[in-house]
Length: 422
Image (cartoon, rainbow, N blue to C red; front, side, top):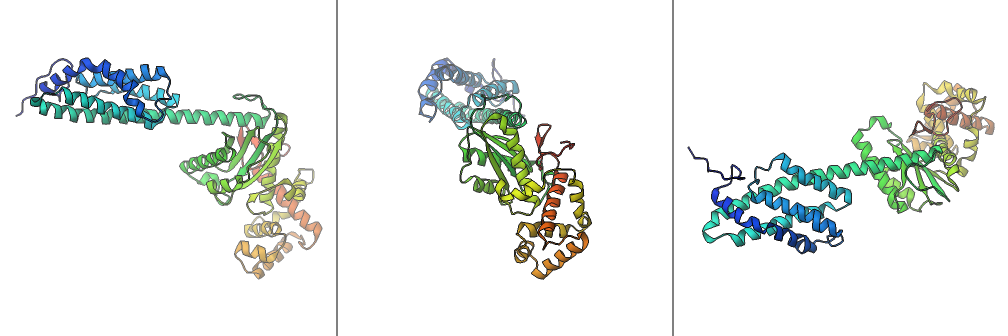
């Protein structure tokens, strides 16, 4: 059996008397070493010199002093959770202050190096084994402390990002609803209001929460970079609104940036409001333009009101809306016919273009159009019946998607119809 080494005051179970004695001789140099680290050693780190003097001379020096004294008194490989709390709290403070993580971690690395030098210079030749023991303990302690610091920093940073994101969402929601902006200056002058719809083929509910979070993070990053500022976005997995105060025109590459971020199926419309009072109306309009363009079979991309003027007008709710929508009821059991009708009208009734989009032979398109006419009685060669078909598609899409902004949340729809609930 091996005998347990005797322990002196403050020593951990794994530290030999010789190593503890060497560490004790170094402890009187802690205050001097901490000051030198804060004022000289850490200055070699890029970005450190720009930190406030009180952070360098008080916070960082105090943390270095505490870490060295904790180690030299024997709390090394047996660093207790409550001992780590001090470093975790300081890491959270540094994250809140905006200190980069790489800079924070390098201060710990440099601190370990400087302490090792003190141990090495203090050790006598016959204390070689004690020095090796302290070196192993020092690296073990560094690993535990750096791990705890990194975890705490990243947790705090994630919380700060989520808080800022929610503040931006709250501002966007307030402006789109015409309420008082809760978190920013009064909006004067032009404001760009944008609506985007993402990833048409699959409903947002079928994507995993992780996939949705990644999608939204890419979209938010693309928007912020395109406008060169933090945009106020109210997005979910299907898309949503973006408000950019002080901006009257979208950047030229905005659509390309969104396509790169969320995929080629993105649909976008934007409009400028000249005052805060006009933002809710602009928000409803751009959502409606996207909805109408999609309902009428137009390909994904940028949609302008002028591109869908007729369809936009025909889709306005009225006493006749239900009867117009019912014109296409015979196609409810044949979704491929509804899809063909939508794409055919979107392709300006070009049967060959419709065939290319659907990957069909033109004769198959003709057969489907004939069947549509038989079931609905609509003659797509007649301007009047074509207009009715466009109106029916638009009204049915409005019924299916509901409102645009309701209960503080965006949906895939557009302008709410009278009597509809969000």
